[in-house]
Length: 295
Ligand code: SF4
Ligand code: SF4
Image 1 (cartoon, rainbow, N blue to C red):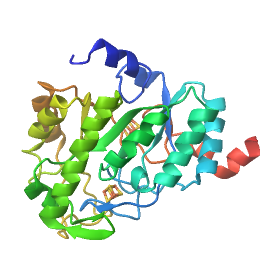
Image 2 (image 1 turned 90 degrees about the horizontal axis):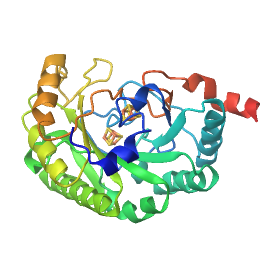
Image 3 (image 1 turned 90 degrees about the vertical axis):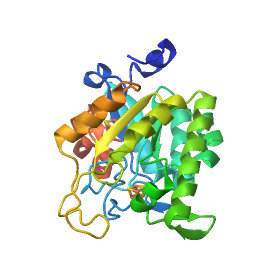
Image 4 (image 1 turned 45 degrees about the vertical axis):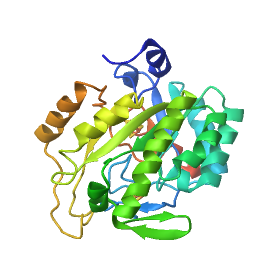
């Protein structure tokens, strides 16, 4: 495959980044980040950030203190737990106090746990310095396009420098921030995975180019996720019936990208408070009331 030895060494115990490790090592997410700084057409704010999770899920929102307690309780009960991620329910970097307080405490109080974070990238360049101070060696950026024309069809607006910006101008800023953040992370030696949501008729033909570009900048893994269009999840573009890709279309695109890039094919789009091995969710065993009983 396309990984260097140095990256292979870093990812071998990470359930999300190693096909082998995901059978033996567990991960958990803590949902400490409610706010978001952009709007994706495919998002429904009632639910977790769709950039990393399956739609239609509401995770239990925690304070940083509750998140630290929960992480320690899980680590004490699930010894295979190697990775703690913050992936929502909004954008972790749009909630810097809550996200960094959680990371700061965990890197001090539970230094063996690897930390990771996912983001839409808008606030990423400003966060790289702080991220590099903690135990964070993995960041996931959701990059759905590198072309503002296409971006304007995916993102109706961003919130930037205290103003709401719309259309192509907004998409251009978001794309620039994502690419700059990616370059800065790679320069710091922090691993970067890129997520893309495949939206038929919008960015499906464009994602192979996205894959080439992020690979050339040093992202080590590309995860193309299907848009999951569910009636209950509502509308995309305000038009009911924007469909997601079928399994064949998704696989064809993953195959097309895999010539240049390591593709992730076992991402489960876990919820923002998932606990356990991939494909298993033991979150119900570690709700706040149960953790308090464990103490
Ligand atoms: Fe929703 Fe996530 Fe997009 Fe924010 S980044 S609008 S939470 S899908
Ligand atoms: Fe890993 Fe994907 Fe689940 Fe994130 S959403 S923990 S990358 S499997």
